[in-house]
Length: 194
Image (cartoon, rainbow, N blue to C red; front, top):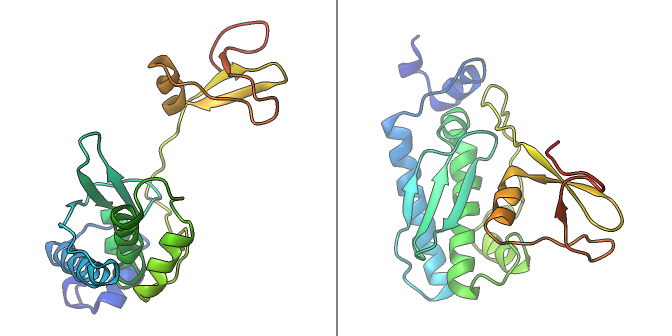
């Protein structure tokens, strides 16, 4: 029997051995599920939330991501490989997880912890398990390797990710949790990258 005729559970089981390709039908089911959860969640927070931009472009090990851009536009990104491999659990867990981030933002603003009590309460009210991480098999999805840059403070050396390093170059600063001093580029006594 070809994959096209197998039930979704059988497709998922065999998909772990090869790269998964997201079908248009699975993407549509994810869009429909996202709208359903948004509708139900809107009732919980007594708002009718706009449907954010929904993209199927997330790579690596993350199943989903909720973002607000600099212009205040909301977007939910889904990992198409993990959706294709684990559709039923993805729709039951990842979709409410990301929608709950959006609802938490709308109801409480940006000053709450991403997986804090407010988010957990919304997850529970949506009927989903308030877990921070998924349990999907991510083998073969590829991971992004982040370069580390050497920084130091008065008490030790530190390694900042390329993301934080570039934020420093644009004016951000980070403090050592131990001594409270600002981190400076390079190792103590010399400058450079690790």
